Length: 258
Image (cartoon, rainbow, N blue to C red; front, side):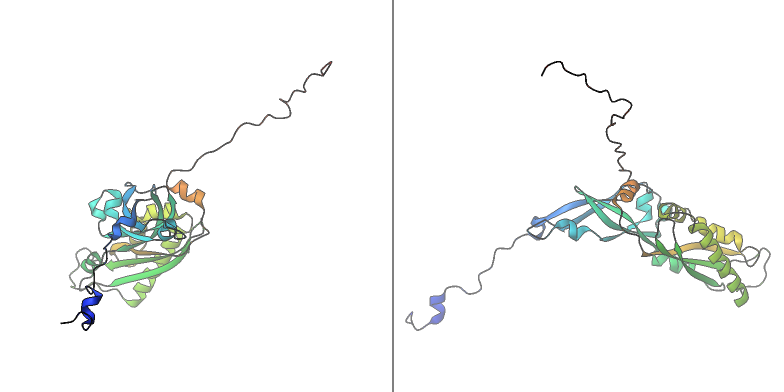
């Protein structure tokens, strides 16, 4: 066969493979730091494309939201049913400084609480903290059998549920309106609000499994780097140098000749 007749032979091999570059070769690892009110500070690591030209790695890292188990943050396996959301707000070297962004229950824990022959009572309320965060708090509770009860069911009437929900609103407002975000998160972990709801509603209907089921941050104040560094225990007390006051100033002596 003549070479000029067959167009395929003159062009060479078709579909040559391009060089495959490993995508991880152009990425960097960053450490994630949790706020200081959690026991474990080193949460894990995250990947981002290396800074190249106008594309800055810090811009891609900021505002990332991470979901971490509270059991890992506090070294307590009993808190494994809580999921804490952390948001990256600042990059310091190879460290990503995060802040609290929300909290939720795992679906298996929530399903294990829901049972037959009892009433489920839920309430949610928007609260503003002293440092300007607007937070929506969701609570959940279940009715409990009274002592020496013979009846199989423990259903609460609609009037009792309304009264319990009103008490829930009062407790949430009292516990959260007079503290900042850091103090409020520290109340969520030992379930202070849930225990207070149980105490407040004993006269209406005995409750069990009272929890703050979910926390959402609806609105955050303007970003303040100083407050974030305080949360991470890295605030610097730079007092500066002492300036000589007017009392310590001495006028130089007059020279006889120059």
